[in-house]
Length: 360
Image (cartoon, rainbow, N blue to C red; front, side, top):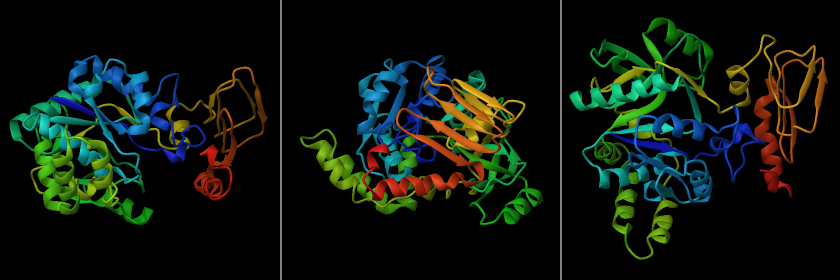
């Protein structure tokens, strides 16, 4: 079993902590360690460093080496600094692993999530290895759906898969995320579904074959990249090919594998938090007043509010706040009502179009 940690995303929704040159997975968003460090430390408790591979962008290599010095440099799978969503970048990582270990399963781990307790995460990985080895099938993760999640796809469950030690089911159908809360609620209430939560496990050579079948344009580019590997001018050649690839999520490929009656969904036996928004950070560790207060904070009569600061010598004092997000980084103070959190995108767009893009 090999482990692939994917750590190449941008995390724009967690601005101003998450920046273009140091995104959220390398920032101490929750506690004093980054989610990338949490993932590496959890995995190193069970797996040797030589079996852990890191997929990241060229510009993030310094953070990978600083925060996981145990992982050998030869285990870095580096994609060009081009924003193409996850499909091309993860395809490049699976290609490299398929070349090295075509017949050994790989477990895919996103670096921007916090999983607790770590022991249960390891338990799931070993259970996935058992199912893949015995059944040869594609495996993904699922979380029981109780309320509509407009950012999630859904998996309709079939028969149970016994014997792994973790609750698992054959996937009968993949449901792409619905357009409205009403449609999503109807899906949850009328079908046995779980929210799809990426924790992929399969053979990398089979994943590349799936790219060939469902995204032949990506596959053709990956084959050209393979021809350029381990040759003079490799990095420049890979970049030239990579920038011709269309954007798209990995689900452009994997959604076709789910619902064939052969793929399996494992229900996550641990708390899995995607720390991708300030709202998810608040919910992760809110107090009895619904607040998340991190830093030198004095809050009076304040409810449902996130306040986060990195300045221990600077007091942030508030009174009477309700449902606000206040984030004080080294060079940016952001204050946004929770209901308007999507306006962070507008702030970033303004900075990008003006002369203040150094704050991105």
